[in-house]
Length: 374
Image 1 (cartoon, one colour):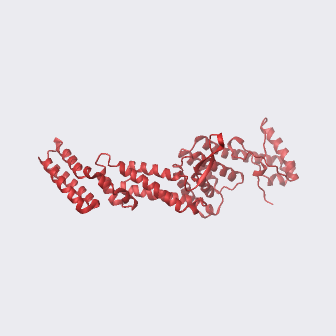
Image 2 (cartoon, helix red, strand yellow):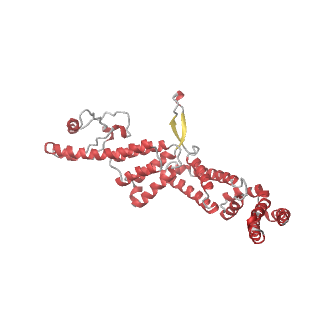
Image 3 (cartoon, helix red, strand yellow):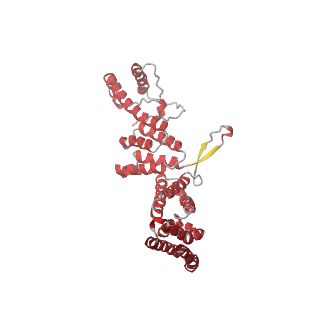
């Protein structure tokens, strides 16, 4: 009788309160009444009989389930206006009813996608030209959405999953800017649009790892922090191969032209890429590039010591990188370069020296990837 009386009371009282006070005040009312009834039931009902649970379920049904859709209709607006306290209360109520959370997850996803893309479109002129600003904006958005999920939904795994799903959509969207990639189907040679995100992330890494005004004004710890930020965004990138292709091309230039700001950071980056699950074959090739450079340095030193007595200063002033073609990104085109006579004479001696060390191997020269100081 006690349970039936409670149910009858709220069946009459709840609709009146909702109509008179609106959804937001009603949520406070429902939460307060649920707590009151639970405390009262624990005092007056037999705890072992299951009556407490029956009463609680009855109250949840009358106070929350009956008005589920009316309450949920306010969710999208609250998310948009960042009303975290009210969302926390709605989450608390809806988590007690069947299928109460699913519509909230949908509203969160839709907000992240629409707000994220609107923000990127509004800043398109700047971010499409400046990889630093692009990455910073993506991170700001991620932090904004993460703060919302933390403060409104206590980092509930369901809401974190919804955030990740929606943020991935923003990162991989092609409407703000497109990177045209050749389609896999050869027929017609049409191109398929891709997000430019992986290319801009690779460009930003290059700015941090190369000797640039950006890397010079940052401390080592700041550079590491920003690289870790890139890795965070990279987890959401669909076409990770595109990032790795651009990153490898940048790394090739940095290593060949000796423009790396910090060789230790370069090698750390390879391991970090491995840790975040980048394609293993790409990461292994990056690791081989560093091994190649070390082997090449040793060969270079041996060559200089061998020819210093006969070639004098020219042997000391020239550095040759002998690298394994399989691991390095390089242009397939061969460029004809007219070399000074001193270098023309020098090349056969390098080849002879190398053949003595490694018989059966052939050197292929890429003069257009060289640089010199006049």
